[in-house]
Image (tube, rainbow over all chains, first blue to last red):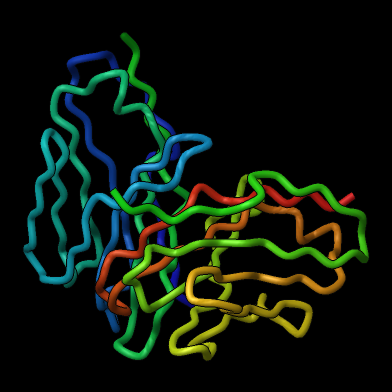
Amino acid sequence: ILNVEQSPQSLHVQEGDSTNFTCSFPSSNFYALHWYRWETAKSPEALFVMTLNGDEKKKGRISATLNTKEGYSYLYIKGSQPEDSATYLCASHSGAGSYQLTFGKGTKLSVIP
Amino acid sequence: EPEVTQTPSHQVTQMGQEVILRCVPISNHLYFYWYRQILGQKVEFLVSFYNNEISEKSEIFDDQFSVERPDGSNFTLKIRSTKLEDSAMYFCASSVLPRADTQYFGPGTRLTVL
């Protein structure tokens, strides 16, 4: 059974601080890693899909890195703003024959103005 | 920007009743999915659907569950006889391609079984 873990579970930061959180996943049969940003009562918003070891992707103040050999990805937020407050979910896609995403439990970020 | 929509946003039903959750995927997408999240737990995969067939399903997706694409736009999840443990947020998603392509999620339907 594929097990995706995220840490920390929750995080409070001051506005302007930079922060990062971790997603770990089994490195065997790895195919793709997805990051989502989810605000309550809204659709989870796709941030990144990453497939290659060493991949780094950026979207505004948010960036992510991927290490498929050791099975982890980091999500970074530079200069956090109150509107960054959300739950950040990662999901792993394993095996070329599988359609499903396996999610972690998420990191809930609260940015204090 | 195109988005996945789901109706209703909240459904309350009695145990043993049938429910149908509805989704309108993004129009040019070919792959469709249902996931659910029981309160406090991880989002879990239920089923994927392509070319009018189930392409993959999880152990959760037993005989009580079925999916259908009744027309060119809707994608439905039916639970035949709801149980208390079916109470969850149900998410529909769609993608152009499978596997490494982005899956776009709807806002979810909260199902409460009493």
